[in-house]
View 1 (cartoon, helix red, strand yellow):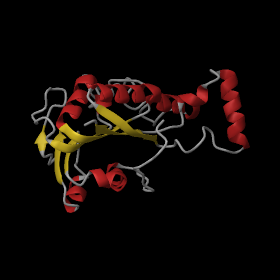
View 2 (cartoon, rainbow, N blue to C red; view 1 turned 120 degrees about the vertical axis):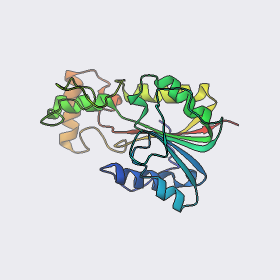
View 3 (cartoon, rainbow, N blue to C red; view 1 turned 90 degrees about the vertical axis):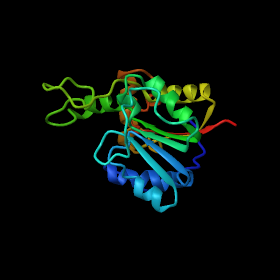
Length: 229
C-alpha cells in the first residue's frame, strides 16, 4: 500500500450524488483541466467540474449522457492523450474486455487516471457473517436471480488482485500508481476493542492465519495513476 495520501477528503458518500461530492473534493486538483468520465451514468460530476473551470465529457449510457459509447467496443473514438484526466469509477468490473478497456483509458489520458474498483471478496465475506444482501438478492451483481439482470459484474477478485491488475497494467502503459486507498483501511477488522481482538483470533483459528491481510473489511479501492514522462 502506498501510505502517503496526497488526495483525501472527509466527505462520506451513500449514493451516486454524494459520491460525486466525495470525488470532486478529493481529487479537485487534478480535475481542473479536461476530464473524460468513462461510464459517467447521470454525470453528477459535470457541473462541479465545469463550475471550477474545467472541461468535461461523460461517455457510456444514461439519460443526458454527453456521448453514448459501448464501452465493450474498442477503441473509443478519442485521440491519444486527448484528456488530461480520465476517470473510471466502479465500471471496469462490469466489462468483459476489462484489459482492453484499461489500455484505452491509458491511451486517452495525457496525465492522470482515477479508477475505483469494488472489493468483491469483502462483499462475500459480509454475506457469510451477516446474511443476504437484501430480501431479494443474496449477492448483488454476482448472484443468479430468477429474472435476467440488467447488469452484473464480470470479475470476482480480491483487493490484492485489484491492486496488481491496476499497478501492473498501468506500468505496461507507462503510468505510475501514485496513490492507493480503500474505504475502511484506517480501521482494523472487527474494531479495536476486546470484541474485535477476540473476533480476529477466532477467525484465525477457523480460517487461514493471514486472514487480516485479505482486507475483508475494506470497501471500494481507489487508485490514482500518473503518466511517466
